[in-house]
Image (cartoon, rainbow, N blue to C red; front, side):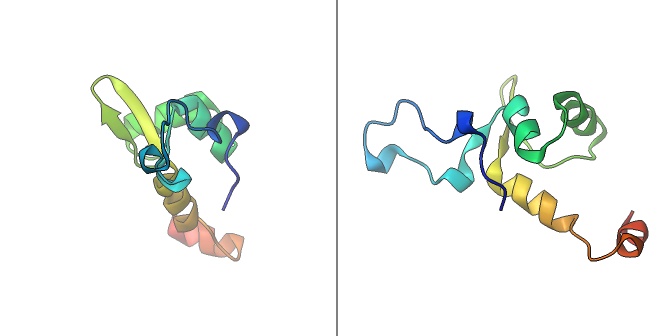
Length: 89
């Protein structure tokens, strides 16, 4: 699993252990998700509009990405050879 960006490792406004979500279910902004995936923010935005990228959560007008969804999306795109990747496309 990819490590989280430094900006995501702390959970703000947590008053007790029961308030904290596991880091794997943390909600990331588009910028944080792009950093996590080592992609450009615009790439994620374009993929989201076309339905090509990882699953996202819409909270009103706000878009967030769950780390679990990003990891699942990465796992689905993991191959042993370029020929496997070419056939999956």
